[in-house]
Each structure stands twice: as structure tokens, then as C-alpha cells.
Length: 176
Image 1 (cartoon, rainbow, N blue to C red):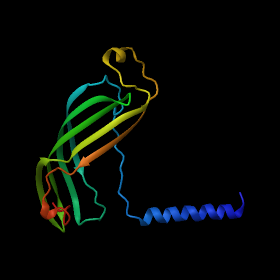
Image 2: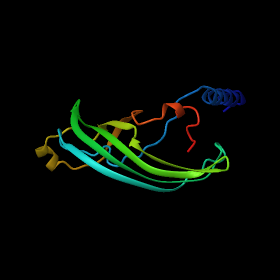
Image 3: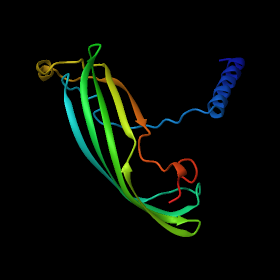
Image 4: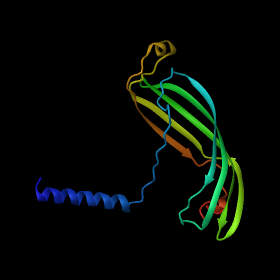
């Protein structure tokens, strides 16, 4: 490649970098959902109950004036799964309703604080569809099917339906 092509590519790369860092964009995270693209017979339903337990410290890295923060909390969740056919492809819908129970403690500006919180957390919905492999099947077809390669896509929505203290929603939201 010639020098002018390298200069153009570098200029385009710098422009994209500046655009990406200067524009306020939503933040995305990765959520690993095992078996999100599992093939099940059409019209399968499942109700799931899960329990998550957390115990440990929080690292705020000086972003808020909280030191020595620890917490112990449980999050039981009730979920519903339903599979269906979407344009001949296997698809599913999952809804999850979590409930949180926890005790948190730490020092805020040198004063030791402790808090107990309990309530509904944000409800989550996920829609998944298999784009390659995994056609939508009835139970009789499903029993004879052999899984090979699967390629799927999904969208997850976490709706802010949990319990929030409106007085502290934006201001002092990290205060115990």
C-alpha cells in the first residue's frame, strides 16, 4: 500500500475513534445464557425457580466515598420458558422475575453504616431464535433430529420494574 492510502486509513480510523468516544452511546454488556438456543419441541413450556447467593466485598475504586463495603444477598428468581415456531425456525421466549434479599455494610465518609434491603428486582425478558440449524419441530420430529451446528440471535430487555427509593434514585444512589 502506498503512503497516501495509509494516511487515509489512519485518518478514517482516528475519525471513527473520536466519533465513538465523543458520542454518548448506550452501554452494552455481555450476558452468557447457557442453552438460550436449545432446541425444544414447539409449544414446550417450563417454569423454573433459581437461587443465587452472593457474599463478599465491593470495590468502588474511589468513585464514591465508601470503604470496606461488603454484602450478603440472595436472589431467588421465578422464570417462564415457552418455545414456538418463527418462520419455520425454533424460537423461544423467557421471562424472569427476581426478588432480592440482602444485608450491606461499609464506611461512608468514616461513619460505619449498615442496610437491609428486600424487594422485587428488575424483570427480564429474552427472545431467542435459531437462524441456522434447529428447525421448529413437533415432538415426533424432535425425537429423530440430530443436532449439528446452531447459530442464533437473541434480544434481552431488562425493564426497571424493581423497587426504587425515588429520593435516592439519581442522587446518592450508592449511599448505604
